[in-house]
Length: 482
Ligand SMILES: Cc1cc2nc3c(=O)[nH]c(=O)nc-3n(C[C@H](O)[C@H](O)[C@H](O)COP(=O)(O)OP(=O)(O)OC[C@H]3O[C@@H](n4cnc5c(N)ncnc54)[C@H](O)[C@@H]3O)c2cc1C
Image 1 (cartoon, rainbow, N blue to C red):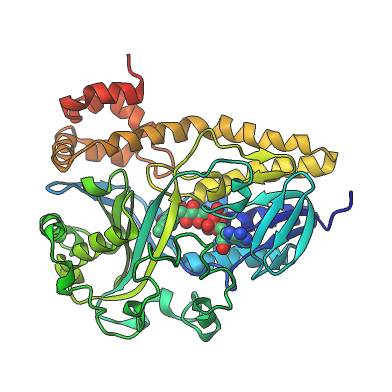
Image 2: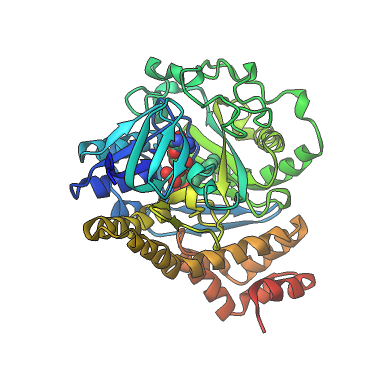
């Protein structure tokens, strides 16, 4: 059989580009097929990653917008403050980072074809067909095409995901203060980019791009959103949104405002995480990118319309955000980890969101995905060297060996959270405070590996004392306690 490339990677997201770089730099021919016209746009990420990023992948300092020491965790009535001595997490310019990773792959020899939406894959022959009629053959195909992966669909049942909605918020409208708005930093406000809302961006506004520009995606590219770069307050404060939800956020905001509004700590050093029952097992985040700008979003089982209402309630009831501008609104999908998912078939593998390689507790996929790139590149390179595609199976085996236990643990945490009401959460937060959990979380908490903390809680007998008694039976069945 003759092939055009050793490896063809579908998707120039952070994981696809990182893997392309690792393989191309070893001298193999690599092509990346990306449906977008411009890499990284639209932003679909809160851009918070543990500082391990610096060990696991390269990141230029210019793409780090902020660093944070910890988090305030809020239930409706109580707060927990988790603080590390040193900065724990980086807030990154995700659009700039995707571009950086793609360029690094190209510099290592990979060829990037933009506006090349893949519409069919044949894993047996290694043939890939794009919407623009480009047809390529590869010894190995990598599906790194995100949560709606066409590569995964060809040999897996469709999988589950959460919806996510995020707003970029500016306070005081000081545009020159805001890293992510200038052309150098990210470029998504430059003319270069204007095309991404146009039809040129093949497949981006099409119906195939499920849920993205469909009606589900309420107000996303509607007129409501137009003019998101002028200083006007976009009007989220309007009467449309007066409903029961408001009361809830008035409460949560009243209690947390002293924290968010910078009374105890430098608010730029902390992220705020809000746990409320109607979005569990997801949460709402408030992430400072600079002193005047925030990424505020949530992931949950709600549809986009309800997420929008929840977010706008949050903004309209918080003093700090009353006169802010909404710079941009985004929607996206966060896959739910599926331990039974097949990752390898014939000459094709899946990686990243396409493989549901996402931490169930936080919805984060970057650190995990970058680490898994090492497992994938090892298997791919060995397979190419030995001219034996069966070696690819080692990737799936090694992934399961290294991650299945941790991710399954996190899934149990997710299932536990899902059954709680706001009163339960308040009760738990109060108990956690009484049990000195702030210190324990600060000491044992790890953004990338929650099993250590959960084990510590179990060891100290905290789990059973914080969970309302009514849930013991369910808890026992989720965790398999005897
Ligand atoms: C709102 C939101 C907030 C998040 N926040 C965080 C966070 O703070 N920290 C964190 O670690 N993770 C976060 N995540 C998750 C993180 O963004 C993903 O895990 C990460 O982007 C996965 O990278 P990927 O390369 O696998 O997939 P993607 O980033 O989805 O990239 C896939 C690429 O494939 C392309 N593609 C798709 N289909 C095709 C096709 N048919 N043909 C050609 N190209 C195609 C897409 O255009 C895209 O460029 C968040 C996700 C969302 C939605």
